[in-house]
Length: 251
Image (cartoon, rainbow, N blue to C red; front, side):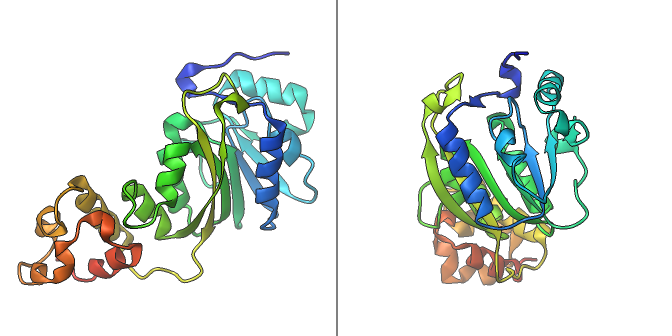
């Protein structure tokens, strides 16, 4: 039984067994008992994941054709597939769980923000993204690709950029390189006034990333506090911790 590729779902299927094994190795460096695979597609990773013993495994797949293909190929998956969009599912396990996937590129940022939403439950995520997205998530302050997603993810997770994946590892080959990253919850919880204030500050600051902070976020602070030297910086030069501290001074 074969399946077709759907451009609309951003499908590029992994065919390189070496890359699959590297992802599985990275995943198993942090033990888990519950695992969610996002977008199993043709099952390149799934066949390895099903060999991991003593875990509660689920996969979420939107495309009905792939769901039928997977169940046909791996009958054990019959009750383990959630046939929905990942962006619309409820949290899939009661206790903490790990997430893995060759993520559909067209919803990669939403997938990352879902990890933030589920931060109390996600103990690890190993995922493949378009390389520039992966680099952005992992970037540190001072780097030109450091931005909203870098700060909002690193506020809750430590990010490791693991390795690059070449275009020819996929069918069909995407037009861009890919990168695999791992997220692990921060050991020290970052103190912020509220998650909402933090998100507002970061998005407002980077909305005009070429400007000094004083100009881009002036609506959020009292005039007197804006004289602080910190506001002479551009947003990309503020660390995640500095953004977090600033939330306590917001109006």
